[in-house]
Length: 146
Image (cartoon, helix red, strand yellow):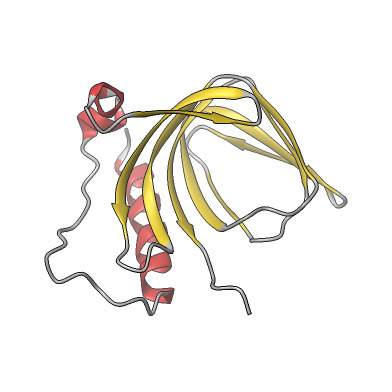
C-alpha cells in the first residue's frame, strides 16, 4: 500500500476522532491496523466475525469501540453486495477501499469509489449500493437520537 493511501486513512481517522466529544476510556490504546492486516492477515485473527449485510456474507474485524459505543472502526471484506437503502443510512461512515469498487447511486446520480479512494456517507443517505466485492477500512459514528 502506498504511503498516500495510509495518509488518507490516517487523515480520515483524525477528522472523525476530532469531531467526537465522547469520553475516552483511560485504559484504551490506539487501534493499529498493520500493513500485514491491510494485506489480509486481519481476517485470520480470532477477532474476525462472519456477518450478513443485505443478504451478503462478509468478514468483519472491529478494531475499536468507544466507551459510549457510538464510534467504531475496523476492516470489512465482502463479496457482491446489492442493496437499496430506502430507510436512510444508519450511521455516519468514513471508509477507505483497499480493494474492489462500490457504486453509490442516489437522486443526484452515481458515484464510483475505487480501490485507493475514500468516501464519507452521511447518516440518513438514501440510495443504491452496488459492488462485485471489496475490502475496506471503516470508521462509523452514531449520533444519539434527539
